[in-house]
Length: 334
Image (cartoon, rainbow, N blue to C red; front, top):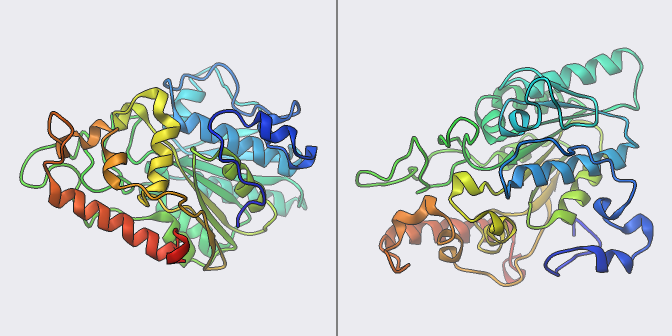
């Protein structure tokens, strides 16, 4: 398993943390946590990206003893955290352009190496637009060179910052401003886009992992594990976007959990091109439980919640089932 200790209770981790030795407790349970993303940012209520970034970078700061530099792509995370001349970051942080965060991070790592600095670590980060689309060539180059960078993608499955346009990570049938609910095949088309973690695995880099904001301790564990490797590493975190997905802001964690429990988003780890483990689904849920909570899929249902696009839902269920089989997400499928 990717983590030795698993938390299943809903809500606070405090009770579980009290039963552990201090070194085993979650980063957020520590009074010494970095608070890398602090007050002053302008994220929406229920923003999964803000939550994921805080947990990921606080974990990275603990793993590196605070000796770290972050390169951020343009996107929601950059815009809501650094409205000029303000910043909500409390660590060395740089932003350049939408598509070059992997290149900037690689450049920082190269500069540190040229100066003989082997202790300062480098993290690149961005959303799915800046990672899966605009910055994908730079990311692939970073993987091929095996640059000593951890890159974290916070995937909210569309270009949310600019008005909810489709990205290469937008799932089939989802409504966005550029995949409207019109015509014979409403929403995003099947057969388009890409699953970036699988492409990262194909590069055979030292470490690849996926996670969701439904399991924050899992994020911490995987980020800390990633920092034990040298070379290129990639962590892809599914982050709920209440605004773009059309779900209630109080259900951010629930929706992310359903993405994992239905198989719509597989949670796994890989090392050097080989899948080494996956987070098993304890109780598999049908995809309709996930889809119903999001207005971006409202066209698949009638006014009383009944499925009216059975063929589309069946294709989405088949997609989830393929993920379960491919990554061994059920004990019997492992």
